[in-house]
Length: 64
Image 1 (cartoon, one colour):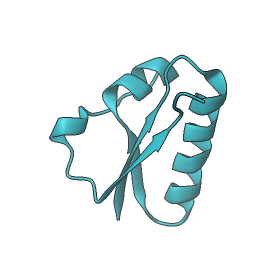
Image 2: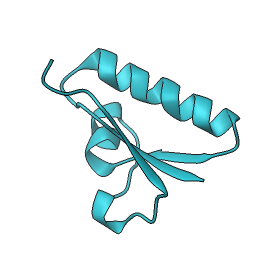
Image 3: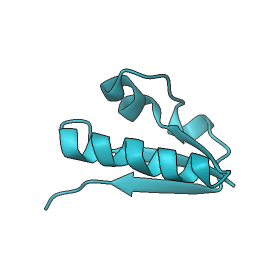
Image 4: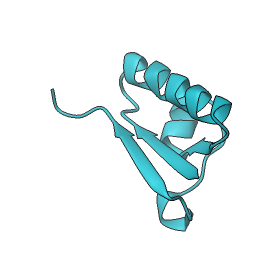
């Protein structure tokens, strides 16, 4: 399974949680990467969401 993780980029807790989810998925044998904006905020490399062939997208954060 391939997953893309999208996180709020203005919230350090959300970014830390995104890293943790990626780690858990990777340990389970899944391919997990960040979208471009999340990756940039985390100081990493990511892919544009529109260009991914992910099976699932995990979105973290929100209004409340």
